[in-house]
Length: 170
Image 1 (cartoon, rainbow, N blue to C red):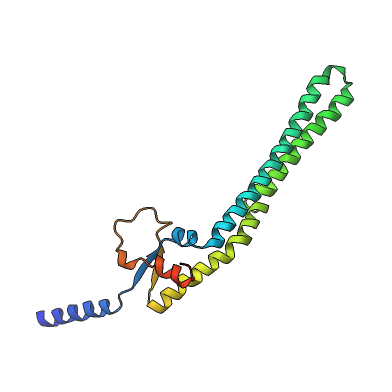
Image 2: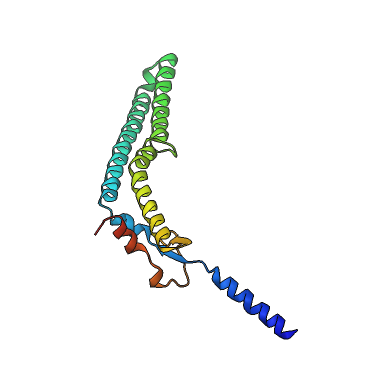
């Protein structure tokens, strides 16, 4: 009986080891920094964001000037004039807030612009990682740029340089 149990344990251990999975990892941050188009895209997004921020700032400044002007002449205005100018001031502030949301919001112009520049680059990197995994028989590849804590990772499992080479970047 002991021999049968021992034989079953050995058989099960051997069968489990036959299904061992192969893992690897990359540092996507390093891969992206190696791509010249990525750095150009980041600069372009930064410039576009700066333009948007300047426009939002000018809209808020204009609203503030309208409000300050209203306060300075408030005593010389009729109630109807005051209400009309107050309404204009509030409307300018709403316009600034609306533009800010349309530009910097979750699905705003900046996010769409960034996506249009970054998506093709991200797709290239993902395709290169998938190709490396497929050709080398990896079952799973982790991105250690995202994982902020690992206890141990073997340098032999780092596929970052292989992916960079696959992208044709030196």
